[in-house]
Structure formats: C-alpha cells, structure tokens
Amino acid sequence: MDALGDLLPAVVRERTTKGSFVRDYHRAIRVHQRSVLDMCDGPLADAGLVDPRKLRSTVRAAALGARIPWAHLITSLGANLWWKSVSEAPSCAWAMSDEVRV
Image 1 (cartoon, rainbow, N blue to C red):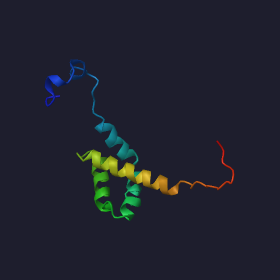
Image 2: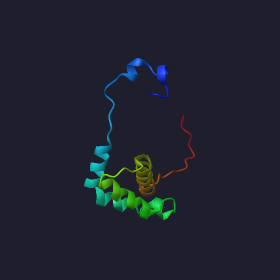
Image 3: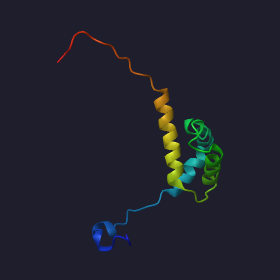
Image 4: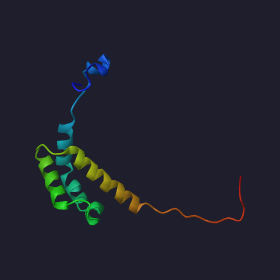
C-alpha cells in the first residue's frame, strides 16, 4: 500500500477484510505433521531438488509456531504433491484408427 500510494484505488486501500492466515498454517502443520514430514522424502528429494533434512526442519519449526518462509514451504509441498499425482496417474491409452471422423 505504501509503495503504490495513490495509484491504489481508495476502495482497495481502505478495505478491512485483509487478514493473515499464518495461524491457520501453523495449526494445519501441527495437526498433520506426520503426513507433511512423510512428504519431505518425496519425489523432489529423490530428484535432488530439495534437501529433505532442511525441509523436515522447516516443517518442525512451523509446527512449533516459528517464523518460516511459508512461500517456499508451500511451493515445495505443492510441487511434491503435484509430481506424485502426475507420476501415479494412469496413462492414456491411444489407438490408431483407419477411419477419420469429422
């Protein structure tokens, strides 16, 4: 808001519905910590794209309520879930046909 000044419309600048969901993130990590820790050893770690020890350390810190780089953690966990779902999805079966349908 400070950076944009008057370029930001007043209706946006003055709204009161902005919020922080960090408490919800901490609680979710705490409640699902075992499952989230299991994801730290997923396909991203297998491919050498993340350090699973550092990822687990960040998850544990989040469960304790520490300030962590949420954008990096959420991106890593989301990419891990995506990769896993893509690799486990059934492949399409294609067939050649002599007949062309229009």
